[in-house]
Length: 119
Image (cartoon, one colour):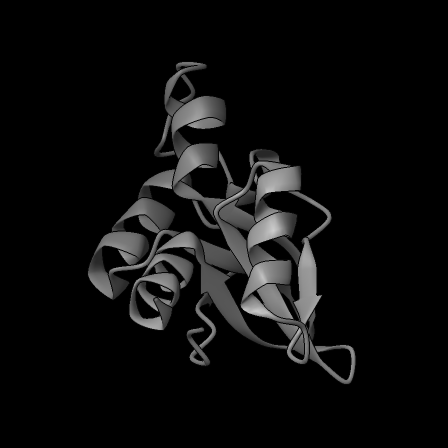
């Protein structure tokens, strides 16, 4: 899990969000309005709801293509639980919560590394 939560504002353009993902070397960004996380933007959202729909990446906002609500998993749940939830929801990123507060993001890559090292 990455405890350094990367987030963007909902009014950021898709182009700027894509550049942020590139620069931060992440596959998703949480979307934050004030003190509240309101969605998640993934590479899949950018491709499927942005580029494939021929939206203008310089003017289309993150809010218009982000996934909501954010799918979360409690920090006390297992990697197997996270794997099952990702599979069930067909997603590659989960927000990790502790005491109902987002404290990190778990990616499918994190799980691959964990399972590789576990066996």
